[in-house]
Amino acid sequence: MGPTSRFAVVGAGRFSRIDHVPQTGSTNDDLVAAAPSAPDVARVLIADEQLTGRGRRDRTWEMPPGGGLLISFYVPWTASDDAHLVPTCLGVAAVEAAATFDRGVLLKWPNDLVDVRDHKLGGMLSSAVLDEGSFLGVVAGLGCNVSWPPSDMTELPNATCLDRLGTDPVDRAELATKLVAAFDEALTDLQQQGASQLHDRYRAACRTIGQQVRVERSGDDLVGRATDIDPSGALLLDVNGVQHRVDVGDVVHLRPSS
Image 1: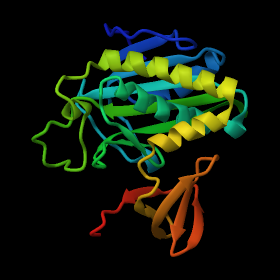
Image 2 (image 1 turned 30 degrees about the vertical axis):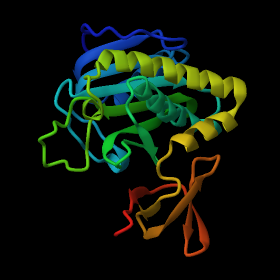
Image 3 (image 1 turned 90 degrees about the vertical axis):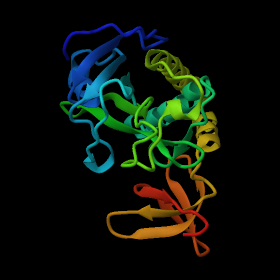
Image 4 (image 1 turned 90 degrees about the horizontal axis):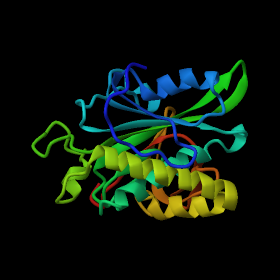
């Protein structure tokens, strides 16, 4: 993964192993590859720059070095049937970490971070970790715009960054420290209290619920009102009085004039 450089991030709970690199291909890919050698050890990898960063449907995206927080977590997990709750914990933790800087960050189903105007702040991507067919855990990654894009960048009119949402700049290392602690706490709460409390926290932070949306799918699109998120993480959509359950799709929040 390359040499570790200076980046003062404090570990918390299970996340005592934290590495930082100036540059890599993908922090998610690095942790997926490393996990089988120490499957019971949770770890965190942070990069200043990713050369092959990707989002949903393998979309590529670029961010200048140091413009945001690029962080991935490997979480050992015993049961694959509830592994989807691990990235849910990360989404809730990201909202709570941003709130400590007085930033209004919300979740957009299924895996985006947005502000109250629906401008995109970042996204999440997760991967199951398998070794010779055995499920080991989950790698969950987050890319969050901190100081990029700049306010005068017209090429990305629907994107924003944390620094634009407040008067004082956000320190990436401090944000990472708060995220690590919040993520560890969310995972511990999940294991001790069950999924119901996590589901409530996600729903409370989800801007998609109650919105008129278009769900873009590979086969067709659905337009309707997002009524809820069910316990499995699926979006519940009312289309002209007919309820749809959507597991996969890209959501566009529609304005009243659209």
